[in-house]
Amino acid sequence: MRLAFMGTPEFAVPSLAELIASGHEIVAVYSQPPRPKGRGQKLTPSPVHAFAESMGLPVFTPETMKAADAIEVFQSLDLDAACVVAYGQILKAEVLEAPRLGCFNLHGSLLPRWRGAAPIQRAIMAGDARTGVQIMRMTEGLDEGAILLSEVLDIRPDDTAASLSERMSVTGATLWTRALAAIERGGVTETPQTGEPTYARKITPAEARIDWTRPAAEVDAHIRGLSPVPGAWFTGPDGGRIKVLMSAVAEGEGTPGAALDDALTVACRSGAVRLIRVQREGRAAQPAAEMLNGLPIPAGTVLG
Image (cartoon, rainbow, N blue to C red; front, side, top):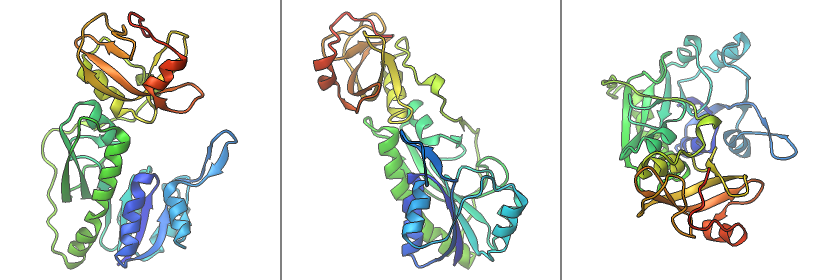
């Protein structure tokens, strides 16, 4: 099939790789424009952009797909279909209707649960036991299209947003070959979404601070759902921010925010969490035990 691929983050790269390996003709790759990154704020292409260029594919990076010139270019590609994975831009009807068979999106949840920008993070933060990847027909509504294929994944007790995203990206990539073959022969069943939707609003820095007055299971889920970016954080005894990248529910009771031992087991409203991997401001991530060698946090210390 003659395809365009539209995606931006690392999550989308396995899907592009799978489509290339399946022998489809990728006539255009669309990605968000290069953004400043790192200490030098050097313009850096997205993971999809970089991978596509390494494979010799043409890459388009319009600031907005709502612009008339961007729409005209897309319409001129004479596409059979467009495959979209975490592209990060709203597509108007003129774009969605341009390919002969339509535009299709790989979404990281079991719709209609967690429509929107951050489904993987929100599923972990909410304590969901399972999630999934689904290929859906795109409409102008937010993740409202009919479902073509689904694969369910368990959310493990030690999953972070990063580990779950990696598994989902690989599993999701394998759905494309089956979906496109069924779409092309007209043998696909498109199932409308049913049930009450929930929305995975974009993660904001303001919600990253750890609230020790919540139950331990919620604090643990909050930490893992925000790991590694933006990273849930608390203030240490020196007043500096400390991100927590991995935690686990632990035994213990006490004043919320109080260290229950010398190894960073911290009391919550009910129960406690053990902080396993942390990152101080301006430093590399490290096991909590290593950080405590340079910044002791003795039992009884109340963390902010």
